[in-house]
Length: 338
Ligand SMILES: NC(=O)c1ccc[n+]([C@@H]2O[C@H](COP(=O)([O-])OP(=O)(O)OC[C@H]3O[C@@H](n4cnc5c(N)ncnc54)[C@H](OP(=O)(O)O)[C@@H]3O)[C@@H](O)[C@H]2O)c1
Image (cartoon, rainbow, N blue to C red; front, top):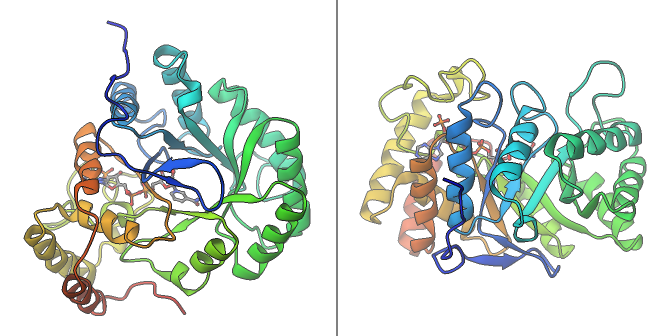
């Protein structure tokens, strides 16, 4: 039977928040397609996750040119899912993509040059079958390309109608400042800044989070569950089929360290006292910061999505809970602000 989105998709728990000082609202929970949507993955599960997400108010889907594997296949699969199930719903969706990491052979398939960005967005539009992206990101500062070259390419992409808004991801603070100023002066201010942020990875607290806020830019946290570590998944070892166990996953076995698992067990006890799963508490912990617009979660099943969506039932913390969490995190070798 043909899929018809739930009529209740905007009456549930999902909360929307203005992205920085823009007029665009994003759901507090967004869905990323980095893992589990490639051509090595189960297409029916991927389809069910997109449907479930949309039925429950997730309007924002985060892609990049290289997501797969194979690179590009997450965009192609998402395009197929849209074409088959979501005709007529494009205006209810925010679809993001990015360019900047290695994608095709030769000197132009990687980095943040104008050549790479211009070619990449055309490829991404073809793969997804979209006429435009809502948000197009420079995926990273590549260490060589002048920020001005990358920003001019993004400004021109917006002028060409291929994207509505510009985003930046993983920029050092000094480079981000140059970028924000240039984008603002061109009348295409940066909508959103995307970086890694979770209880286990807190470097953004040292600058990028506040800088985005000061610039009137939204902040979106990726890998808020530390790729699954901040869930009940690894409490008793590395289960079969998990990201750390899969050869195509970016979470390496040696990142599942004893000190992290010991901390995860203690964090899990606090989550239980809050009547939450650990995943829910980890997402709530990131969302408690007013400067954070949304978290981009990954998921490998509809059940995980359902679990994560229930985060929104309880996103506040008592000061005692926050202190207990800080004490636990202080026992772990985690990436903290320098
Ligand atoms: N800008 C960038 O450079 C950048 C980099 C990385 C990611 N991102 C974006 O951020 C998105 C999310 O990243 P991520 O996938 O690393 O996020 P994440 O939410 O930290 O990790 C997702 C993984 O955690 C596990 N999980 C999720 N919910 C769970 C639950 N309720 N219970 C148990 N396990 C659960 C699943 O692992 P299993 O697969 O093992 O089940 C899932 O694949 C990406 O898809 C991408 O859009 C951007």
